[in-house]
Amino acid sequence: MTSTYAPRGKRVLLAAMALCALFAVLASDASAAKKKAAGEKLTVMTRNIYLGGDIAAPVGATSRADFEQRAAALLQTVEKTNFPARAKLLAAEIKKSKADLIGLQEVALWRRGPDGLRDGPTTPATTVVYDFLKILQRELKAKKLKYRVGSTQNEADLEVPTSLGYDGRLTMRDVILVRKRKGLKVKKKGGKNYTNQISIPTQGGQFTVKRGYSYVDVRLKKKKLRFVNTHLESFLADNRNAQATQLVGKGGPLRKKTPTVLVGDINSDPFDDESDSGAYKIITEGGMKDSWRKLYGTKRANSCCLNNEDLSDTTAAGFDHFIDHTFYKGKIKPLKATTVGNTIKSRKGGLWPSDHGGSYTRLLLR
Image (tube, rainbow, N blue to C red):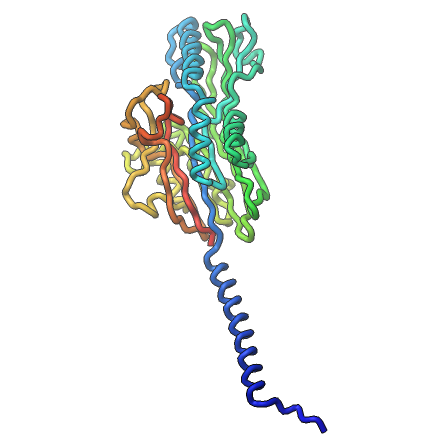
């Protein structure tokens, strides 16, 4: 009869092999558990890219002729602030940030009507002068950066007569850009205008200033996230606070149970008086946390705003308000935040990227 008894040396070898296999399994399990605990890292950015001029300038006109001259001056300022050149600076910021999700505000579409026709919105102007979104996309592509539009929300659409002999038209948009990255997928997108709007009578017709928000629901591998982008009212605190209330209220985009990030030009500084801090407080009391203050406490991330409409500032002194924010809720941990566009080094060739600064924030989705 053949014996199945293994020699002592062979038994030791088999035991060692079994132990190695067990350790390999345990190490693999530990590695998987550690990776699961670590979560997924994601970088988000908020950037007001400046529409190019002060749209409030024509509002105070005392006559139709005065209004048309002010409107013409506004269009000339838009040309002077040179978005095609500024877009190169913005694209460089984005490249450095490696942002996965970007909330853009004041993504202007400037159009004009035919010569000799000055009837305001009666005959909508269709000739594109500057499409800020297409211009920026072109610069991103030139830097070999791969971004797609995740969501666009149209805001105010204003058309007025000018002393240049034609109508000028501005369509404001808030836009979310999504980096093409392995494992990052947009599952749903949307947006809405706020119920609260400002309507202003002017010598050139009625101005209705719409604002709103856009969002994307994304999945990064197995992690879910809602990313919301907004631009709250800049002129009147009561309107701004009402819009913030809609954001956090029933039916608002921040009520989703999924981990959520809100970025945008909130026009509300937590370190200012009650009228300016109101919207910020509504958002934080509504369950959102400020990532910058979580990381850096009372250190300010001043991002607003240059003093001169034509961006001719030669210092960064105008950046003395902290109003561009990144909020979060749910299983998210902010790791690091960096400001952009708010120091003199941001100015290149006599141009600033925007009248605002911005920031990008590294997050851990747990």
